[in-house]
Length: 126
Image 1 (tube, rainbow, N blue to C red):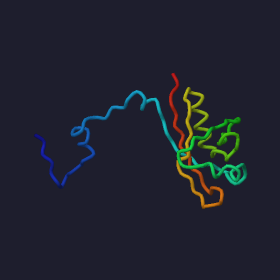
Image 2 (cartoon, helix red, strand yellow):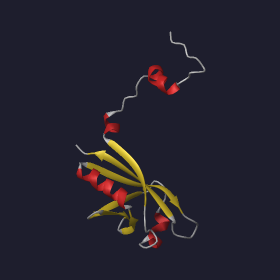
Image 3 (cartoon, helix red, strand yellow):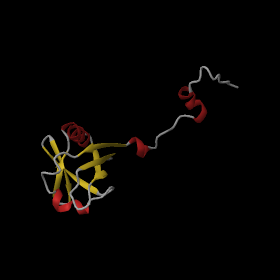
């Protein structure tokens, strides 16, 4: 039986021995998730739709050349930052599908949202 000395304790190295290695399911291996901010939300249609937005609300994306825009129905909310848009386009070209949801929404009562954080969940299409 292995004994652990308190002075030389490295729990992270022992985790695989204690709990075994965690195996991802096929669905987890085929999915990726990352978050991104939405830029320029005050410039577009936010004042018309802010009262319909809440955390967890599904949104859509539209890729236009090297940029990507975030939409709620037919209303443009803003654009993804260049780095996020580039990553999105690369994943879409390699065969991933994407679902977009509002992760965090900062708004004050009776005023349009100040900040929107979205969650991009990619699933490998077979």
